[in-house]
Length: 264
Picture: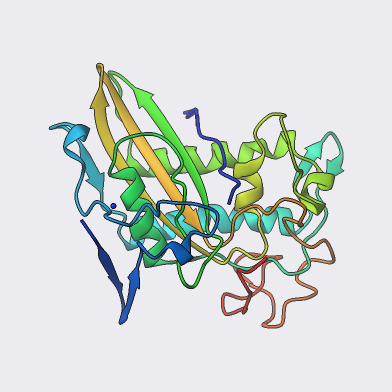
């Protein structure tokens, strides 16, 4: 099954709502969270699906098994790149990554992603930053179909693999320094997936019907976005700069407890 993603990476960087994560309270309406412009998607955010989503709409519960699937898909792809096993052209490989973090789930990023998905309107939000992740990134995708059925696992796998498939349009130069004013084929979903300073992710999936089509809308927020002029990851022998050791489950990645800064 080939899912077609129609999203583009956002590179710029609402009643009053508090979202409680653990013991921390964040005022998402604080303009300091969005120095490059807002509004923040979780300011006056949606706690349920928007009425415009329609009667057949449904928010998929991303339980621990689905979270594990999302993480495994990402980390296997990150491992492939970090280990120097991913081509970008015939017999040409991306460089190994010296210190690529292992992605882990973040409930706050997931909750904020849900504020976008619950609108049932495809598009990047202007701001999704948190106190911990002041430069949060985002990948989005939507798959529309009629007269067919797909499992959630199939959908998520298709979305992530389609994002990663942009590797064929990127190259080591773009990885070494994310390009300014880039107008070529999409590469930002791929670069977001392999960002070495990104160690947290949270996602949301919503289904809704429109004009006879079933839409599956997938939103993932990441700890750090693509930063123009900065490397997506630092090249070097795989895992050579990891201070916590190397992840045996995902060769080339640092151990899950590697401390990385999500600040450019």
